[in-house]
Image (cartoon, rainbow, N blue to C red; front, side):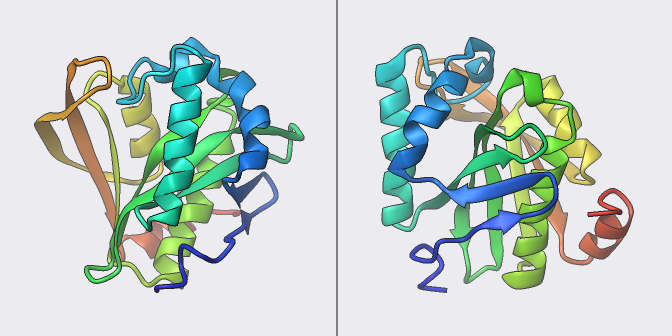
Length: 195
């Protein structure tokens, strides 16, 4: 799996294309990142372009240092870039990773785009990487995100109390969800039927 971070991984279905995040995406994603509501529940706080530059540079750096694999999200139905997501907390030794750091333009939330992207990431994780477990986390206060994670078949495992300190200094409790390999075939055939 040493070449995982060096490969340019493109995941695609009829609705979405996930491309490796590169410098070319900066100008495409910055207008989306200016939507203040995207950062209400995240640990990163993007209040201006300097904040976004820091966030974007960190994402690129994490791929170079094999910490996470960031993607730019393209909505094929709308023919425009929609946001970003990452595969992170990757442990090939323990056959697990986390899908997270996900944000979409508010206009594209609840349109099916998230489900299309999550299907691409989950099927890649379980069917190509042979993972045992995929994790998803969100803020305890982000009920919309918790609902979206539940709708893709993930099991709520519990609350991680005082789990993180956000960039603005506030303390965050996180809700941990997961899907495991034995569950994936039924989730794929049910929730993701037609993908």
